[in-house]
Length: 175
Image (cartoon, rainbow, N blue to C red; front, side):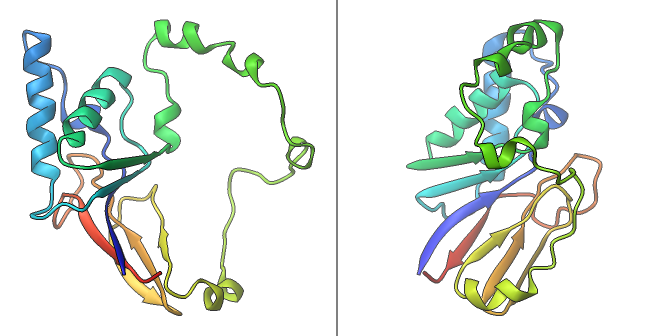
């Protein structure tokens, strides 16, 4: 059995609006927010599965705060993690795609649109003992199907009612 801690869709900048008079006040606010997210006992590994926040500096402050508790932190970028919130960031990154040196030929003309439905029924038998994490929607769940644990532990936005725990959860996976 392996275990790791898991959260997604933190949307940090919606929870913390940078109201402190100094940078130190803002860092302290992020540290206190991180402490509120922690489970009673932390695992060695934390997975943040998308949508950390829009403000890169604030995201870094949160990761530094969480690093005090976790040996390893894996951040998987979500759709909100690519947003640019100000013109300075947009200017800095507007030509970043030009630095790509290679796109795999089989993906260059991919006809798949951004919207799709994946049933996955035929694959369930082959993923016994695995964890399948889904995000994007802020409806938390945890259930097993065909031996696979399906989990969503999204924090979501402050005004959403969906947060029974509103914190990082520990996932135990059979490997």
